[in-house]
Length: 379
Ligand code: GLY
Image (cartoon, rainbow, N blue to C red; front, side):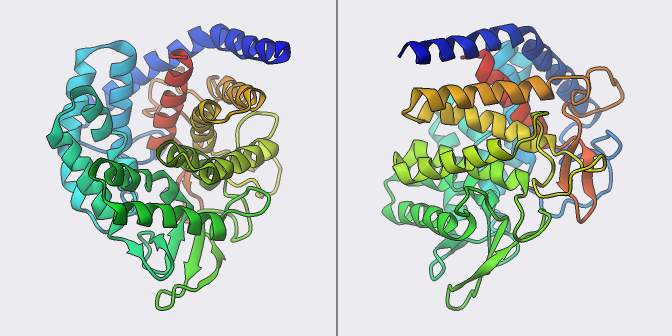
């Protein structure tokens, strides 16, 4: 027990020592997000091009609107500035119509970071209705034969990213008592565990199924290096997503997957603390980072530290969060010294093969960085 106490003192003193740098990230986010919404009101960007949010590059799929609103809620939480609350509420209204969008699998990304914080502050049933509708809409992508919620690609495709979105189906199930929704969400998690999570705790990006019979055909990828590789962001989605699901289910099977993902992520994380875009990308000076994968993992590890029973494991995850933030909160990754760069966190990658947002800022990188920073500042 003395060892545990010492370890927890260690992360607490490390967090305290980092406080000024973390507060500087909040200030940077305040100025960069303010710049974005003043320059381009009502615009919901995904990735920068040469550091600029507004460009004509394709979206591939439109899944990021919730992150801009999420940033605004985080800024309100940290600063208490009413400006940010007004912005968050206004931007929420602009995306409400997406609750009926059956063409994407991203309604968790979109609504859990926008309407959920709004609802939690107000208890307004109309806001909760938006969340429940979005959860029901996402459940409409469920494939009963294969037992999974299909990706935007089509009924034959399961993505690891959906682990970040299925929590909105759990939410809708819990708030309505709808058992059918709960079964969909639980079955999706077990199918994902069985088909996309590998014995070593790594993950595949995509699972392909026979849409007619539901038979699993094999693993595949769109954004990773190969079907067999560890696409670092996909692994971070899984570790964060299964952790969030455990908060709804209290099923140790969900937490166990998150722990296996976390341990594998940390095993593969380079000493620099920043993940390459794919852990299997050949090492060398040309290998690009995906800073967003590390930002997601930093926040997901802090969440998981609160969920595991073993205090030493918990301390290890908190220390890992701080190590990652220590690496990200530096001039290499933050845009503080670059007034013309419109994002907050540099060196992210959206879609390597399509050459979209490569070595750029990405909206979710900015969001999860600030979320991780807030978690530590509020600990
Ligand atoms: N669409 C989720 C991602 O690019 O990670």
